Image 1 (cartoon, rainbow, N blue to C red):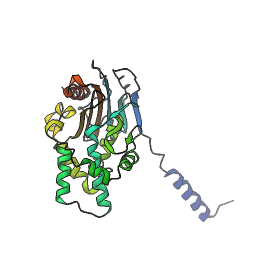
Image 2 (tube, helix red, strand yellow; image 1 turned 45 degrees about the horizontal axis):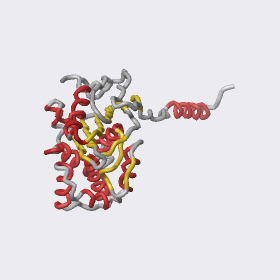
Image 3 (cartoon, one colour; image 1 turned 180 degrees about the horizontal axis):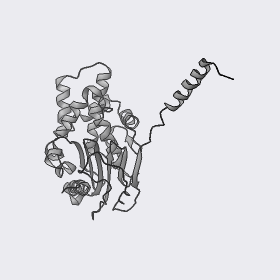
Image 4 (tube, rainbow, N blue to C red; image 1 turned 90 degrees about the vertical axis):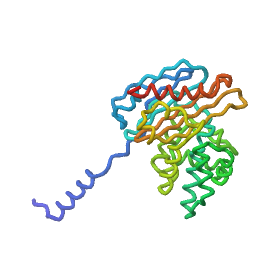
Length: 283
């Protein structure tokens, strides 16, 4: 018996609708090995292509003979894969988290349809470029103190980060969360569409004692487009705490370290340099 044309049309439409449904979004993949020793384990090989072309080899074995704790992560923004070591181990950010303080404040100003004055922008510039600490706590408090760090965790999809009341400097982050935060800044979630370009420009112009780590070993042309923010502090626990964050076109790097204070700041800065150098395909 022939079916009415209307019934056939409805059936075809339903079939078309089923075939056009999108498959679930692919979750972020983490390619990393957890290690408890001082020397982090290398990430296993993965055939996925890197957006940075010949610049980085994120599956490279990173080995160093250094004292204290060190951990690294490389985030491929195109494939959504993370590579690195000790993925669950955290260290404090020191001044590195000033990038988030600025981003959170600027985004919230835009959300309230407020235009920051020239004096405020000048303070934020010094906070990022020169790592000036004088006004950082003021903006952190205006952001809501610990609530600001909780927003960072939620907005940027961080998994190991923990905040401390009345301190941006003591924020605990894993290296992979640092790499995620860098991507969050680069893709506009952190500072919002109005201020992302401004913030990245400030981070590309970090100067003075805060300009160290990954930026020092990148090719000259890549340095110009790479945004950074580092943290460094010799704390009362008798250790230097070093945090390095760098983000470029399609990639970001996070490196954390802490070690005995007698070794000096550049011991940790060298760790950030050497990790990056070993990930580069051209030295």
